[in-house]
Image (cartoon, rainbow, N blue to C red):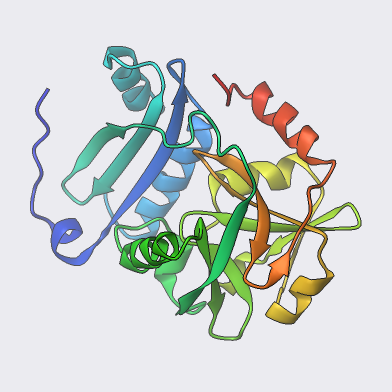
Length: 242
């Protein structure tokens, strides 16, 4: 079926929202949460469209593939579903190295709290990190506090306790971030660069990769945590793995 794109404010000014949903064996992971988030953002941007779970499920039933990454994009006049290969379908396979982004997150910006079409800071920083041998860049905000990655949220572990930056620092509350916070005791705190030396372990999350263990962030090194096994169990319960 053809999908026509209307040249509205989403195209000209980036006024639009999107969700990336992992589909495993024709099951969309955390679909309710994704739909709820985009609908809340559509209201916040005064976009008079609403996404129904049934729309996504109908697309999945008609689609020829079983497992992939589904992208739902919505603007004033457009509601588009596209698919691509899930780059994390076989997992990462090892701990990853992260670096610090060269640009800052603005905690006073309305845009950083929503998954909008305004994504070039993320894309450019992600590409720059990859070119320099890193998996993902991590942003600071204008006050010097850690916020998030280009396509991920970040967590730290200290003496068995899990910590993550506060949303008010200027970050998107990822669907997988929210899943981890609801599944495990997590403290949302302010984290500066100086605080990093006190953490034992680190991991990042997003809806496609679930979580990925972090070997290092800049000059700071981390080790594996025993709780990672519990993470795998919880992700299996929601059908995350093939």
